[in-house]
Image (cartoon, rainbow, N blue to C red; front, side, top):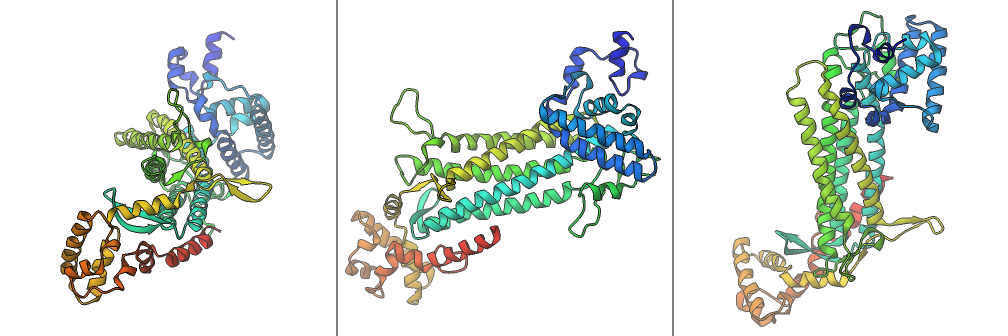
Length: 483
């Protein structure tokens, strides 16, 4: 057989073409060296398809057994690193199918009955992404637990709460950490929703129009665990949509983008808090780097890089949306470009969640069973910073309202009191009672409890408030939810 004939035999569509694909086009169109990560999903989907073909009498029991045997050998070869991935075979699907045919002969050729690479790749991506979403869900739980651990240790630590990056009101540092727990819990909900829509079977749609073979698509869906909460099989209901839909990939990347935005917001605060101008926290040395020229520096490289990687994931989302916006139905080669941004988004998100969980909460010491090395909180620095911005001004206004003054009048009185404290270079709580009474005679000695940081914190006991008693309630709620 000539080289030309050999080249054509390696292609699934070779008989129609009079010349082999050029090497440049092979490299340009090949996806095998990035989509080979889906090999397990490809084999899993193929085995489910083969089982159904045998059950429907489309292939014989002997062929089915040969396919199972061949796939077991391929699995072992890939896991041991002995599988040869070939550029000429373009993608993960053709590489596995070609090797299967080498191993078991005609049975391998019969595996593709009733399916196309179009519905096959759509199934593989969904199966692969489903397992990645499950892992990401676990990592989100780990990060939330780390944040809850830090919150529980710092319920009574007073932090300046900011709006517009100006000192606003005192808050519990634990309460602040729980704000991120809320964000990541919403992220987990979004990923669960994405998983539900991802977990639908395209296989059996074939190239775009379905197939004339008597396939049992619902059987394949059940075999692959593509079922709803009641065990009902979830099958893509329109063959055109089944092979061309990439909504699930866009939805996933959108959810990942939001998670990375939350990471980025937290990173920004960690970077600010770690700076010498704040000194609110320390990050363990293993998450920082030094300077090549300034020996005194400890740079928060991990939060900074996560902030940067957020832009990378946002870019992948924009890329996927742009990829799909002009495509007519049904499948187009453009869709090969969905995988690299999707794969990189998954990798970036998983790595970021892992490292942040350890950086925030520490690493488990196997000997003691206790986490060690998380962020270190400088409570005195936080409290001192809270005293700089008249953080209890609203408490003075609330005090006057409870005495019967309209809030807007109380607001105006407190503005004058703050101006006086500024001119005296002292906190509101340091103004003598006589001076405060000049602004309103209803102010009495009990005002100083309201003007203290601790009093302000403890007063905010409404559901979701920053009072330590409420923070403890929320910690308990999260512990149960994350158990």
